[in-house]
Image (cartoon, rainbow, N blue to C red; front, side, top):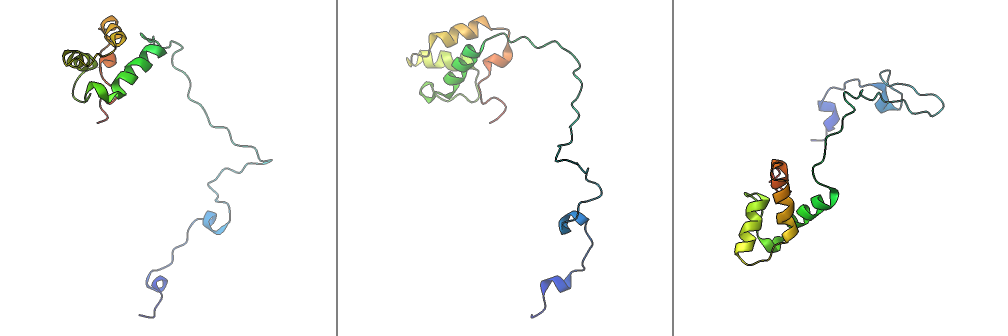
Length: 117
């Protein structure tokens, strides 16, 4: 029991970087300059069109995060809004208007937790 644990395992040589020596695989940089990282070329300059603005996105996110309107998992935002309305919880009318305007955008109708819970 007085043997050292390290004596039971054979020593292996590692790269010089652990011993304070720079590894031959590393790129040496002179004058303290940081090596440049190649950036991927853009395939298209066309940006996707956002059908709704930042204000609408924040409004919908706030609706999702407000627990007063009940749980939001397992249902769409429209279903949650309608359920809250039937229960007399007075959900924001602007949420219903945003959802009605963007009826074709299925991602918009999913809550903030969709595919995360």
